[in-house]
Length: 294
Image (cartoon, rainbow, N blue to C red; front, side):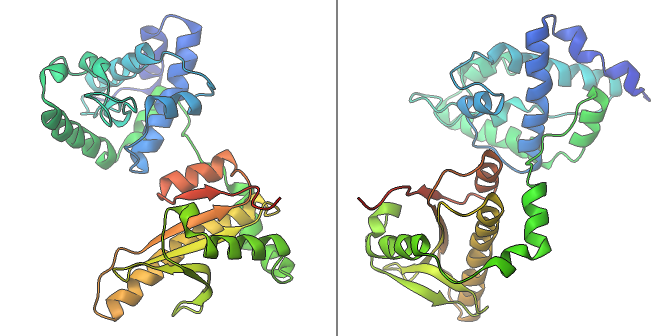
């Protein structure tokens, strides 16, 4: 069945009667689709609230229900099979549904609350996989007249690719040096209990700020950026973490071993919201150490 965009772009307005809820739903659907396209399936209701712009808890269960209604209606109109997005949002509260959708998910699947924890876990994992592997989310956005959810790193990306950052490097700054030495001598700040070494060189020639070798010989590479680092420099640091992990794993393959290497990003200030999203996207743990000296 061929359905024009004009016939589908009113679905949200038809289902959601109040302006406030319509605005929430129109923000919510691109966010959830953005998570699905990036393979993100561990976000909580609190994360979604914050992404919507709420500092405090705001009940969004009703709007999540609308999201599923809207996708179901779009599927009916177009004859396409569209997976649910609601399974991607998990409960972070202690209880039977911790790490799984809350009891309200029964609105989407009425038998949900009759399942055991293990049954829910397998069921939700399957739904998450369907959402992540669905290749037509851009089509869904187009049909609903919505714009994609983006991580806005355009300005930082342009700065990095221009080479300006490399021209401006004038040696190691005092804050960076002291922060590096602090982390090296205080591994507990990132949850480790072994002594590290600074300025360790990988086979790529990259020099890691601090490197820890654990008892099983796996390695933890720490990239450090001081509070004076720009958002572009912070973004570059995140991609350095990605690179270090890949290089360490490749070195192990070369040596015929397989270790659980990892990375850590230590910074002297809060990350921008978009850089924080990059962290979450690539599962890079971050530690903010804003004041280590009296």
